[in-house]
Image (cartoon, rainbow, N blue to C red):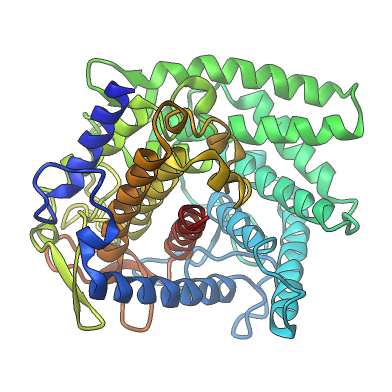
Length: 497
């Protein structure tokens, strides 16, 4: 327990430079970090931005009035068509987006008012359209099959030069569809007969190719065996096998998925680099850029949040993941000029901030090209905020955690929670959780500083000035904020229980 807390404090120290606390003290709660006025204004901004993020996410899902060629259910990565052109459907981005949309469904109490009921119907229509879009793109003949990275919004395959295949995409898609099945089961609503065969088709592909080390990573730059890809595949295969087992105990595909899960677990454990002191992103590098000497990458954090890494001992509350996140923050803090500013104005209150975080330290992509060097990313910084919130849930007393239901997006990530809180008093655990809430809010404040007044988010922020850079209205940026806000809301509810 003592070593765990020391490592946790190391993580907190990586954020403590933004406020004058000296050595981090878990008894110092969120109000001590921010003060009443700053905390109130940040709360208000998070609530407002979450509404904007939901609106912008749905606005980026077809049908589009301005483009009748777009198939309903097509999720464009961004409406930007030039400098850069992101007006495509990336399998990964679309699936992560739909997982977030589906997560809103059980949290929207449709029985409370007509507005909520209307919103639920809208989300269900969106998910149904995504099912149809999935059927369309799965049926397309292409060089990389189900591992094809991206499509046009009309469902046709992008045939230009690109980093393919990307098998985390079909894993994420199968997971989103599985989550939709679970939602409909919970409401006793009929399930489209298309859905389970679509899930099975994606997972059969994943079970066949997961061990290949020639696939592209989440950033589409490096080939090898990737931690993020394996974590997403592990979770999708596990949850898919459980779904199929409910229909039949004797299912050959489910057998194959379960065997693949066991083998993936042994591979995931290899990514902990004891000498470096963090979880690395890629092993068995087989192509693409070779400039990522550190192999330190925010995609490892994304894997812990979206995939399933607990079984390999590399989950959210593991020593290894805490050390990895702490190292990420420490490496990025001196890289960007914007991090010299440690507070921002929100609603007239001075609010302290955490560091802006990018993809990996050696990054040179600036959102348009490679001329100006790498920048902080909105989605990566939101992910650090979410990490703090979800780590905090491991310090919430059991009775409080159970009162707010299971964690999202990954049930496995919360299944081992309370391992730390069970070893300490309820009071000290709650203090730690409140401190982590405040630490996560530092990163929310950083995102607030670089988000436009109307809520518009970009892919990146210019490293020196902090202005938006790259794709405007990047769907994944809104998804990352929304997901972090959901994790925060669950933590706040648990602490209040």
